[in-house]
Length: 158
Ligand code: RB5
Image (cartoon, rainbow, N blue to C red; front, side, top):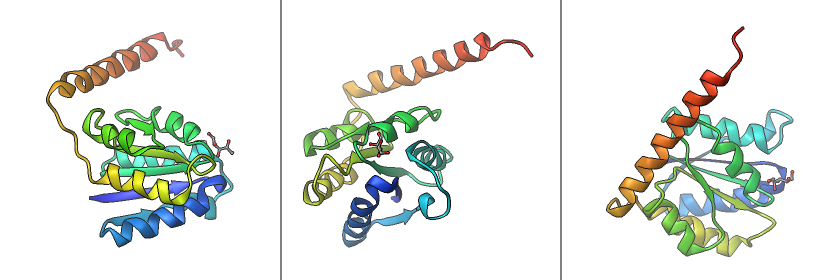
C-alpha cells in the first residue's frame, strides 16, 4: 500500500512522528511536504494530497492540521475522495471497514502522538469489509454524482 502524508504548519511535528511510525510498520510513505516549498495553508495542502489519491498515485493518504477538520473538508471536495477525521481507534477502523475512506485526517492539537500512532495503525490495518456497507457506500457515490451533475447544470452559461 502506497501512502501519502502531509500537514499544515500546525501538524508538522505530528506528521514526522507518523511518518516514522508507518515506516517502522513497514509501509511505504511519501511525505509530500508542500509547506516546505510553498507558503500555503491547509486548503492547498489537503487539496494537493487528495488530488494525488484521486489520480491513484497513492492508495491512501493522511492529512494533519490543528483539528483535522479543515483537511477533511477540503479533501472531501475532490471528486471520488472520502475522508474522515478520527481521534480514536474504533472510528479509525470503521473509516476503512464501513466507509471505505481513502483519507484519514487528524488534529495535532487534539491528539497526542501515542494515540495518533494507534489511530493510524488501526486504519492502515483495516480494509473495506463490504457486506451491508457496500450498498451505503455505493449510495454515497451515486449521490456524489447527482450533486456534481446538478452543480454543472446550475452553472451560468458563458
Ligand atoms: C490553523 O491554521 C488551523 O486552522 C488548521 O490547522 C486546522 O485546524 C483547520 O481546520
